[in-house]
Length: 261
Ligand code: CTP
Ligand code: MG
Image 1 (spheres, helix red, strand yellow):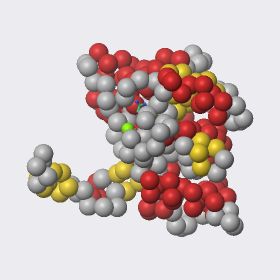
Image 2: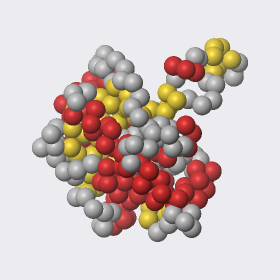
Image 3: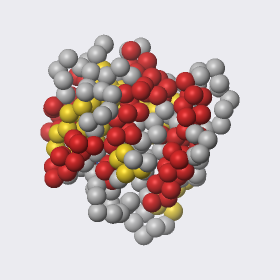
Image 4: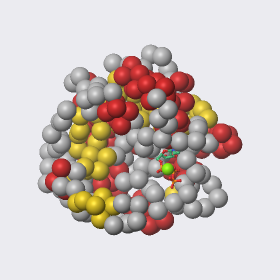
């Protein structure tokens, strides 16, 4: 089944700071959005990638992507991630039956992780999210900052991208959310959950961390710039499915997370 991708890149990056949108922040000669699209294209055969840019930065983002190894189009985004993804979905090649949605802010996505998401879709899943176990204890607090509850950590997962969907299901989920006035879901799987549709999990990877705060840029720069090619070694390891025991940042995993739902 033909697969296409949407890369939401229209956020400002307020937590990162700086004048440019986060996706245009350059690391090792290319902006984050270039790294994210390049990584996606290494992991799956894609019809196209629709990159969703801030309206006033569509030109620079188009220029930044000229040399990626996959057909790419840039469309204007909206005020929230959900609205930006919806704009990408409206513009997507009608031949695509399956859709990957991947944050521009996750530049080190391992190709094997993309393959796991696509494989779960090919096996019949309607929605797929890559996850890693929560490493910190997570507490619910009230508006005053008082602890209300401690969540059971063994049941908690941190969710990454690319998330994968059957295109018709994702389009319906976005349409229903919009009709209900929901505009700020922080990921796309949430919109399937609203409709009671099943969302499967596959193993994510610590290297697919989201660049959010300045410290993440320091980590990214180190990983991309190691003089002996730390990242290349990581990619080789990712592509070797037999290497089950290799360590990964933040406990991100090899092998499949058990599917749920
Ligand atoms: N995004 C988008 N349109 C928006 C907001 C976010 O396309 N209106 C994209 C971002 O560009 C990013 C992804 O959604 O690739 C994940 O969002 P996040 O990490 O929160 O990025 P920003 O919203 O840019 O950052 P911040 O919340 O710190 O402002
Ligand atoms: Mg944001």
